[in-house]
Length: 187
Image 1 (spheres, rainbow, N blue to C red):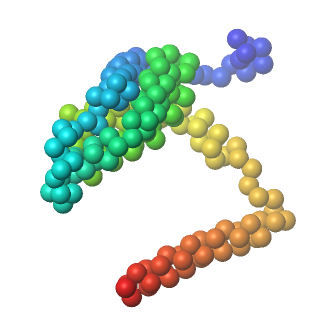
Image 2 (image 1 turned 135 degrees about the horizontal axis):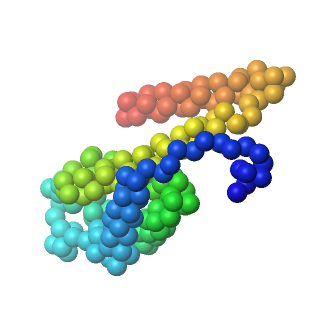
Image 3 (image 1 turned 180 degrees about the horizontal axis):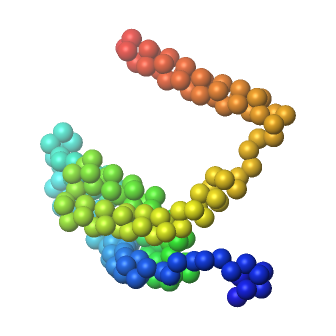
């Protein structure tokens, strides 16, 4: 009732039912993948894979072998998925859950695409990724406000100074990349 107290009755469209279904299904899928990671069932390969030359492994085998090296990493990733899934279960925390889960799902989708992970995993990760985008899209105006329009820029008096520093940082990075490439090419 804070809106009524402040005298500002701002119009808010009703929460779409499809977002409820996307939230619940995404939370379920995140819980499944999180538990698989935390129980050591994901990122597991037969031991004989370790005896094969690296060049003979598929992208899937390389990725799984790499991620299987650290159970702690899998557990942390699982905990983030578990936390994001739990936040998605409630409308009040769904936006936070989507914001937490979107970067993780972006990384998972990229791994699935570029390492040629199974189509089922690809479809699931793309579904969760798209669901997070849909949840965030509903609040896009507020998010743009929080991350862009409501942010203070540099004061006019020192704006030129800050832009010069920013340009120098970019120039330094480009120069270092060029020098590094030149050194690598000479080897």
